Image 1 (cartoon, helix red, strand yellow):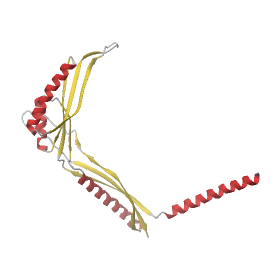
Image 2 (cartoon, helix red, strand yellow; image 1 turned 90 degrees about the vertical axis):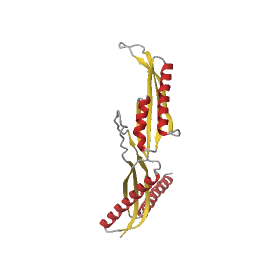
Image 3 (cartoon, helix red, strand yellow; image 1 turned 45 degrees about the vertical axis):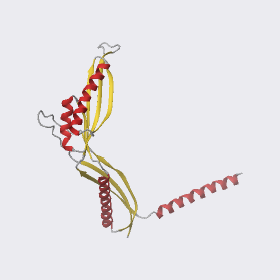
Image 4 (cartoon, helix red, strand yellow; image 1 turned 120 degrees about the vertical axis):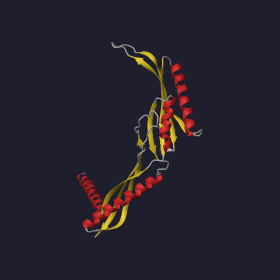
Amino acid sequence: MKFEIRWVLLFFVVGALGLGVRGQDASEKLPPSIRTTGEAVVTAPPDRARLDVGVTTQAADSKSAVAQNAQKLEATLSRLRTLLGAGADIKTVSYSLQPNYRYPQGGGEPTITGYTATNIVRVTLDDLTKVGSAIDAATQAGANRIHQLQFTVKDERPLEAQALREAAIRARQKAEALATALGVRITRVLHVSESSPVVVPVRDVAFARAEVASTPIEPGTIEVRASVTVSVEIAP
């Protein structure tokens, strides 16, 4: 019995040593390499705007809140279509109707004092010169919320491709600089990975109401950010 146990233990020891040797051989086969990361930011002027316009109304009962909201929103949409044309890109993005509560100071059950209705529509404009006029038209017609103004681009793909190219070039340049400093040369590319390009639109653009002239708007620029990591084999 003791003889069998010694053979079993010997078998496991030899197996473990074999695994260690194989692991060492596998690591020795990996070629010497340099790994670098390049980042790039590409900017471009926007060619599209998204404007979220809303109407919020309050009334003692839900029916009145809904009716008042519908009346003001219809007037707002009519004014926007007159400005932008019958084919204007306008769609509803959110609608809510909720009660308003009054909470007793000494505690207890709250009581409903009225209702608030909110309807928000998104207007998409490809003519950025009309953004200020659209804000003015909406607010003059009864809209009392400019929920969000966002500038972006219609087609992001060319900017994404440019950002990736520039990030890859910078990663390669870093690898070449390191290789030169170390006195080695790059023989081939082993691996390339990239993070999906991120488009950063211009959001929440500030604007000031104008009594006579159109509301002034400054679109700014769009940013597209990309990152590329490159591993290259090196040799003496």
